[in-house]
Amino acid sequence: MKFWKFSVFVIVAILLGWGIYNLVVEKKNLEKEVDELNISLKTLKDENQSLVSIIEYFKNPENLLKELKSQFNYKETGEKLIIVVPGATSTQ
Image (cartoon, rainbow, N blue to C red; front, side, top):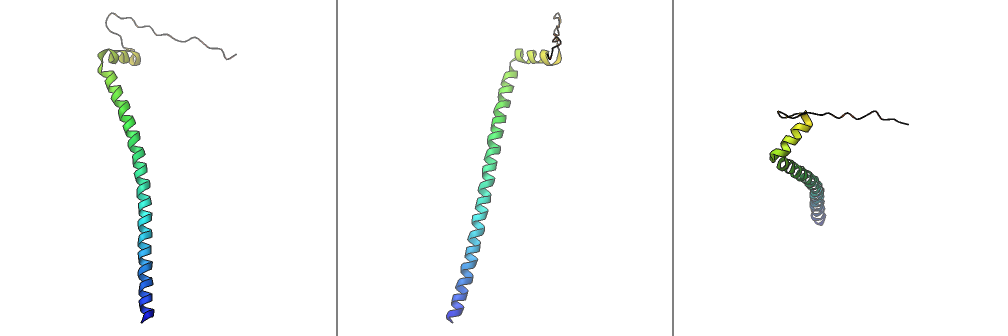
């Protein structure tokens, strides 16, 4: 009779130990995932802040016109466009 009680106790202890081990492994995996998500969140927040500052910059019509002129060689009526070509450089 004592043998059966001991056997049942050992089996229950093994099952509980296995369950606790699985919970610990799952907890570590979830903590790792949370850390990765926090890194992604910080990256996205930084990118969002950068985009907000670019939007604020382009809200000013003068800045928008300046960028338009510099990127697309745009000129307003009456303006002259001068394109400066750098001279040849020597490697000596």
